[in-house]
Length: 486
Image (cartoon, rainbow, N blue to C red; front, top):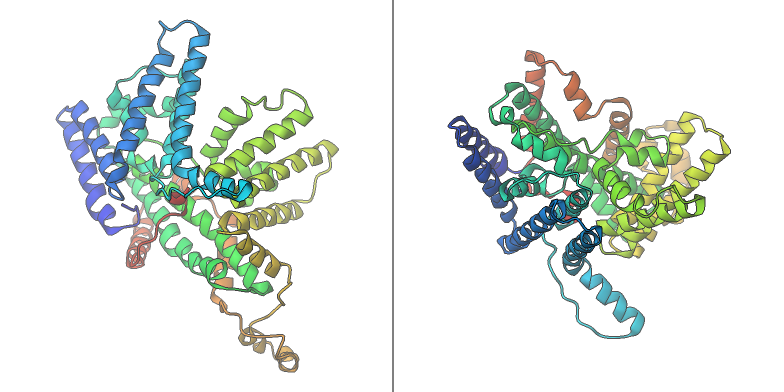
């Protein structure tokens, strides 16, 4: 079930909301909590009920391991380390089997020359997210940073449907007190208004903006055999904005839905395309993943405490693993490698003490991110090479004749070079969308910042109603979120 579907908006969400608070109003707290878990599992099972046992077994396993680690009767640190290691390895084994088995088999066949058949396993929805979330829970339990709750509470922490499928990746300690807070069991109309406001803007970002860019990104990456200069840049920029508005739109919707239930999810995006360096970008982009990579990979590897060379290796290893987490492919690994190297270069540059002008710093950062996304999006190396070749002009620089004819002084020049100039296959619409999107991400606050300042009045409500109606009329086709694939 998708957030951007009629059955979710008009059936699942309102029925879950009203039944949950009705049960709480009758002081049936445990039943209401159980109902929310059941609803979340139903939401998860909507795609494929076959994978329901996987998340159930994973929850039960991690709950037992986590309780064991946080138990005060287990005093020997050696025993705790063994149990923690067993828990982490078991979680990773499940993830590797479903997500990376074919990748390893395919590369083994290529290197060794064997002919081991691929498993062709379908990737269980959200396995990357709930695996990372539960690994964080185990580590926090080992560090004695969690409190013991019953299994129903833990199940709600893992399955809470707004953040189940694609995050944000949340911590046990930031969620469980909210679920346990008695004041959150009653309807808070301010939260309902803000939640609907944030959800509506997130839905608009996904359906109207991201899905429009998706058409041009797909055309360039998947359909075209060759791209000229402008077509390649339109393709790469379309995906850059599609990914941002798609994933941040999902996160906004998740935050908005959770707020309806008086639960505050962590902010996952903070205007990342405003970043002036790559470190700043990762402080703004997919913030909860960056936090996980820092706290559970980079720092345990040694962080920046063991000299510059070790720091650079830790950064590179962390981002290569981060790239591999996104997908079982060398293009994802290379994308992670690029970002790791960029962070190393950034640290070396800072050690010089020279600062670039803000405009130049932004241009370099944004273009690096845009170029790196090419590898993130490409299904194969050839697709990435096709787009990058076009971006540097290897396939010609072809303008739209319709656009150039509007400038009378260039008409004769175009006619004299008819073989060089041709109609841009995308037309002029994506150029307009890219220009508007650039203006939005640079000069406007993000949705969460806007929600903190908004004062509801008739003008705001009318504008919101227009946005919602316009968005609903654009929900004619099924469009999954990009991060569902990761």
